[in-house]
Structure formats: structure tokens, C-alpha cells
Image (cartoon, rainbow, N blue to C red; front, top):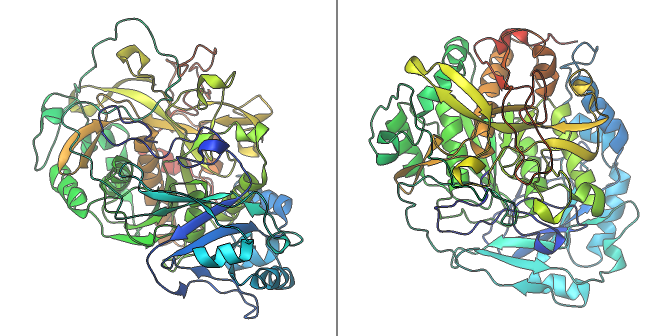
Length: 604
């Protein structure tokens, strides 16, 4: 994930620290969510089998604020069903359910939805149950909300560095917003304001560090000089100082080292890759230039606007640009969908909902390079994370693989203000594949010379791959053999994330190296999409949650590159060190895409 670019002038917008700062990266588990939209469109999308129930996926409209309500659901049964289809060797493995069927079985009933809708309608607000039937959107203009609440929404203006208007509900809300079986989620909303956004200048040729909480401890020793790219670079149509000086790997180098060339040569079908974008823009010209630079034809990008972002974000953002360019380089023949939602916790809920419930159909994979402090597992109201986890479980139950960046703050995602190890959410969810980071050294022919856990503290950057043991999430069944502890361990897998030599990203027509699990995540997701599309093309079921494949496959020699050196400890908390086999610093290691597909377990 990209958080704090050291050499990018625009301040970050996505680094959650707590409920008081719920505007920036991912939720800490507070209890109320909202989003606002500025530009108009009409209701569209899925309708349930019962026409009387107001189930739809509304497009954002001009001048409207949307708050989210949870709906009654069979969360435990849904989790069990999602776990069953993701567990190799069971009769249910890779036997997935259509979204509508899963929603009918585990979500709110028509009677429950209609009852809650009637309560909301009494306030003069518009109600729409999500196609998952796990939560609903309650929408109205600012004036309608003030009338319904009997008090105005609190407003924080947008700025050039953070072009999102923030709206906050009053402490007391009408009883009609608390109908039986429903709960309000997250008290704030953000809406993109095109007139407020400023454009950052090109970042220049220096390496861009991509994360590390401001309060994380850093070494007082003089930093070592950055390593360089000692592989065999290949570029098709560009030249820049970062490439000439060995500050970045080219896309082809990484793909060769990890076996993607072999994977792609044997792949079939057309993958659908969905990238979730929380508050970042991108430029088509940058994507086209990346294709010319690294020798591929970029796929077209089908962009969907989410709650709070009815107008496409104009500013080129390193996060979104890296996600799109990395995925496109791995799978240039794919269909790519970008879901652009608000830069807040509600954007996660909205993004996954639109990814699986939108008109494009179910994607092969979903890639999310955002997240934040998961101390919410212990200290915050769990209502929000419970609903998000249910949506993630339903995503897995439909056969979609979700990949989430494990974070760039090592084993202390919450910084040093919280004792001990802390993780990033939603990477800690058992229904996603959490992707960590490594430092990769290449030799002639782009062969792997060595690979260690990503930790750039020795080079003066407080940045490392996320990984530790969860404080709350129980150990999922797929980790039973790999993880002796009784809680969820993160990450699941890893890949290149070091800053120099790092991933190349073209931002405002300038090539620059960046690091972070925002590079390893879309890379791993796109490679998985190639395998998933091949399975579909062969008439076999989807892969579903990739952890059900990765963990048993890791028992086969050669399926993963085991990372046995390095640690991700940035704050001297004693965790976490790489070792043989699964570990809390690199997970199972790095997938070897030349051999891993052969280790995919057959359906139950």
C-alpha cells in the first residue's frame, strides 16, 4: 500500500490512525459510515428476486449524502459457508454460489428490508438495500438530512491537498435510523470536490518511499547506500534517470524472475481484474506511456464511480497509477475495472459491493492497496468491521479472490502509540489474501540471486512489509498446518516491495521508482487472475479465495520461493523474523508462477 511518499509533494490521504482521524486510509472500526456524491446519475444495478424489496446498487447523484445501515444477516453461517468453499479437500471446495442466491440465503429477508425501508422513508430519505443484503444505503441531500435529523451535518471543507468535503452526523440521531436489526455504520462521509483539488508537481527522479507512520522508530545509524538493479534491464520505448541509474526494476524483469512469463504463455481466457481505488485519480496518458515504455498494450479501463465520488478524480495519484500499471503489465489482455470510491472507511464497503454487484459481472480478482491500523479489533465498536467481513465472506462465497496489501509499517501498523504488534485492516480479515513485501536481488538474465523480507530502515526509510499475529481474528482453517497459533497470521504471501530498486510507476509522464505492498498486491492479484481465467476457459470452477490454493500448494517443492532471511520490525517489538516455511514476516513466501498453477487443488 502507498501511504507517505517521501518525495511526492502531496500529503497522504489514506493512513488511518484512529476514530478521530477516520478520513485517511482504512477504518479503525468506529460505528457509522457515510458518503456524499456531487455529480448526478440514476439508480442502476442488481434487483433481488422480490420486486417489492428495495434492493439496488444506486449510482451517486449530485449533492447527496449517503449513510450506511447494517441489515440483519446470518453472519456466522455465511462465514462457515465461505470457509467451506475455500478449504481444499472438502466437498464444497470451489463450489460457489451466485450473488443473488448467497444474498437471499444469508442476508436480510424481504420482510426485514421492507420494514427498515419504511422506517427510513418516514424521514424523507431514500433507502436502497445493497445487492448483498448485508447493508443498505440511506441517501438524501444535505437539506434533507438536516430536516430528518433536526440538526445540521458538521462540515469540514476540502483543501487542495485533501479535496474531500467531510460530513459528520450529530451525536444524536432519530430513532427511525435505528430500526430493529439495523445499525448505523461510521459517522463521517467524504465527497470529492473537483474545484478544491490541486495538482502536485512531478516527483522528479529520486526514490519515493511509500509508507511508514510518522511516529515509527527509525535507526540513528547512518543509512546505507541504496542497492541497484543488477539484473538485465529491458525497456521497449523509454529512457529515464531512475531506469538508467538502476533505481527501479522494469516490469519484464520482475515477471521473468517470478515465472509470470511462463504463466502467461500457457494462460487462456480473458481475466476480469477489479481494482478498488479509495480517493485517487489516474491519467490514461500515464498508462499508455507505461505500455510503450515496458512493451505491452494496456487494456481499456472501465471506471465505475462510487459513493462520494460521482465525478472522476482528476489528479494523478501514485497509488492508483501503480495499481493500474502493475496489473496491466502482468495481464495486458485482461478486462480492467476501476471502482473509484471515497477516501474513507465507507469506501471499502462501497468498493467491494460495487465490485461484485455491478453490471460488469463477477471479477476474477479484486485488488485493494489500502488499509489501516487494525487495533480496532480490540478497542473500537466492531459493527463496521463485522459488516465488511461479511461482505468479504460473501465475495469469497461467490468465487472471487480478494487481495489486500498487508501494509508498509512492518509489524507495527498503528505506530508506537500502541504497544506490541499491530496489523492493517482489512488485510487481517480471514476472507482475503494479505500480501506482504520482499527485497529482491536479480542477476544476469533476471534470475533470482536472493530475496529477503522488505525492511528499508537500513537505508533511512521507516518502511517494511506488514505482518504479525492478529489480536482478535481466529486462525482460519487454511492456516491450520502453517500457523501453530490460534489467531489469524498475516501476511499470506509476499512479493517485491522494496523502494530501490523498486517498482516503476509513471506519474504525470515521469518515471519514478516506488516501493510498498501496493506493488506486490496488484502484481499477485493479476497473476492469479490469469490462472482463474484459464480455469473458467477450461470449463472448471473459479479459484475463489486464493488462500485455499496457496497453503496446500506450499507443501509442494518449488511452488513458492521460501524467504528465510530478514525481519519487518521497525520499532524493536521483537517481531517478526523470516524462517523456513511459513513466517509472520513473509508468509508462505513468493509464488513461483511457473509451477504454482499445477498445484491448484481440484474442486470438491
